[in-house]
Amino acid sequence: MATAYHNLSDYDFNSVPRAEEMKFGIVVSEWNSKVTRALLDGALSTLKKHGAKTENIFVKTVPGSFELVFGANQMIEYSDLDAVIILGCVIKGDTPHFDYVCMGVTQGVAQLNVNGDVPVIYGLITTNTMEQAEDRSGGKLGNKGDECAITAIKMIDFAWSLSK
Image (cartoon, rainbow, N blue to C red; front, side, top):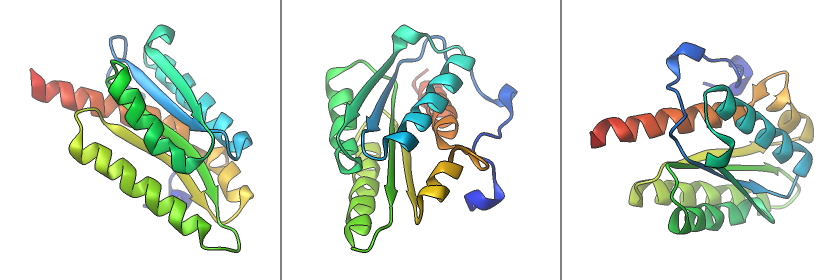
């Protein structure tokens, strides 16, 4: 469903498992930092609202969105995490750079999910304008960071339910 028809921050609080014992990694792109910082704030707030402990949330930055995949892979490799959230923002410009970055991140995250045991949550905003990005990072369409935090909690719960 298109974001235009769904608020990214709208969910049933009671449908989300408690996150007290869960460990999260968050990799945030420095590029378009006004947007990515708002995404991070949303994710952190939502994780904590559902019981995640501050000491179980690890945040690292990378220069741009293309580097999010490497950052996620490194967090999985060198940290004891239950899920990793990637947060970035790519705004379409006049060149095909947008397409290459978006495709690379999308394929990289998909590969990490298929080949790994730690869910990697896709929090890359891909828009035509800065206004659209702001609408999705705490504006009138909610905050993709909130949505990613809920997804991370639910995916950890899903994985744990299969391992018991």
